[in-house]
Image 1: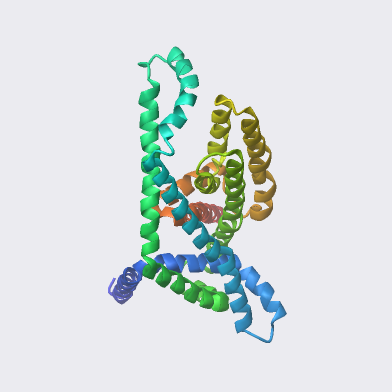
Image 2: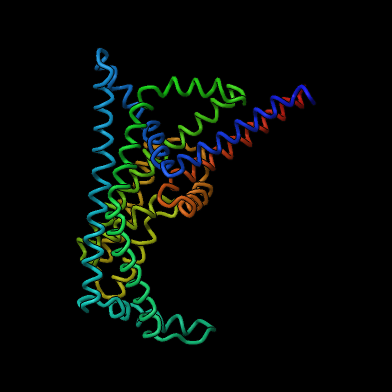
Length: 350
């Protein structure tokens, strides 16, 4: 016991220093996380560019960083500004009485509610009661969006610091990523084979989630938003953004366009209803079958229900970052238990 005391004390010191370090950088962990994710996703791109500029070390890095800015930063900034503008304008129209969500719901409820009350054993519900509650809830949601998004853009200094730090770290991760991985594998006392398996799992899920899930979600939401705008549904851009968020989940954007087609049909807009249903089912719905397998392949190696639960849990814990972090944690959880099972079977054979 006495011989092990120095080593135990050293492990305690390592633990305390590690916890202290993470507490020290906790305000910048999000920037570090996205730098790692972007490095994992765009490292093959960097290697491909590097083959054409073998005499320069900086130029491939700069070209890769510019590509990341064009693919991620500029679209995200544009979308944020558009959401801010449209949600604010829409809320002002509600406040002025130009748009009344309660009236918009009454025609639909007038057709559906008598059927519901006829077959339901609950106390009969009135159109005014439901439309008022739903209209108020919708108004509050739009108001919250209109109020929160400008608050995010006002905190510009923190956003600039986080983005700048993420790209600064990303520069070194792209350049020295392979050496850092080898060094970590040699330092972490778990076993090189296990560490490599965990790293490969992290890499595959991160690439699958960002490269496939995000791109497919943006395509589906964009088509849905344009479709809603074409048939004259109010706040089409906001609905499109909501479809992007739902498309990140296995539930899909059908939760938006399917009820919209039903509501249009009940309001007598048969042609618009048929158009929304056809485009939703044949275009938006089929994108998963054609694009997602080619973009994601079998990288995630997780069932749909596990992706759904982990993504919802990630969004609850980590906000928008959770759509990537949730599935990664779930994949590492599965991988750790699979490794432990293999080790246990190997020990039993001996």
